[in-house]
Length: 428
Image 1: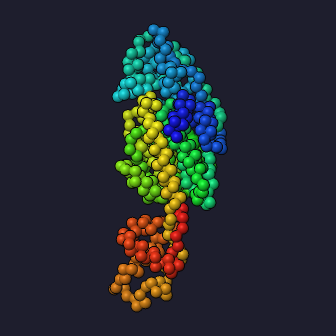
Image 2 (image 1 turned 180 degrees about the vertical axis):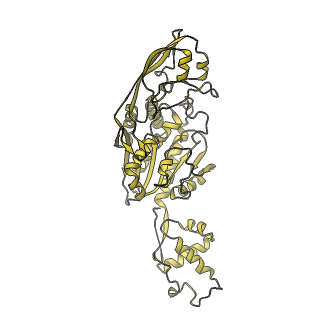
Image 3 (image 1 turned 180 degrees about the horizontal axis):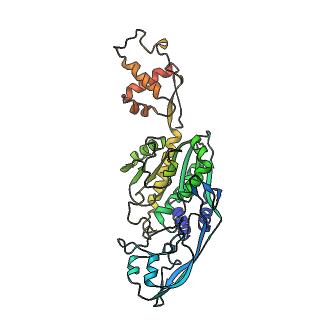
């Protein structure tokens, strides 16, 4: 897998992607060699929830030439040099005026920043601060050959059917240009995870995979699939930043203790040290859209070093030298371990769904009642019956009820004999 991951990375790396346009389509076509993606299309100008689908954007060339005849911020050498979604421009101006359109990172003088302007028309370049300081005074010739036009935002979607319609959802984005961990690690992990799940001889769950432009893509996707996701999703994960060598990080869903959260944290507990983070709507990827209050989907995010927490983030330093293909493969395996845990998970279900079952007539409760005395065994049974709603395992019932596991096991044994509890492969 490691060599194939690197091969696909090398093919995807040079493509200049954005939220809509030929770069996204070309990249999705390459990934479709692994995942048979269908396409969802949203027209430019279309209203999607509280957003509007932007036009398509593509870039042919961009640079500026100094009074010394030297070419600077050449898009052909690094596509991060061009402000993503930059308007076209051609003209001459002095350095003082040009500087209003140049973006650098003084704190990281050797890095080219990654910047976008999707929703406001402007033109500009990104360059290292070192190069910025070396620009000579004088007149510059500027050329930006880009195209902004009405078209379509596209999303790739694939579904692997299982024995039930309960779904596990995996999402990633494919809209950044040449960034390694923050961009390509996510969709590559998703694609190779699809391949492993597709090879399973039996699947209880249905698995849904989606690759889209970040934010506007998730908003568009929810506008069309939100109802289905709310009805069918048992667990979901946003895959991003899984290719660096850092330890695992898990960002919980808005619910905080969803099935997605519990399964991910159980697997990570087996793998060693990890960070456990609460949901945060102020920063993040598309889990913010899936976990917005109206949907409140059980979507968490298993990462390595979280976005914004490594210095290479959103700069030209997030390149192939930074990514670790062994770590990326291990991330795919971690997600697959979650899948296997979900598939094998056995939950308890109360066969009497409305009101408490009458334990006394089954010999499980004292027939002489008193509000002053307490039967510990019966109390444990009542905990089990209340929590056995088809969503919890035996161990989870013990944890949620704060009862010793041996007592839970004993109570479950008695309740099974009385046919008040049954075990099944749980969904949520």
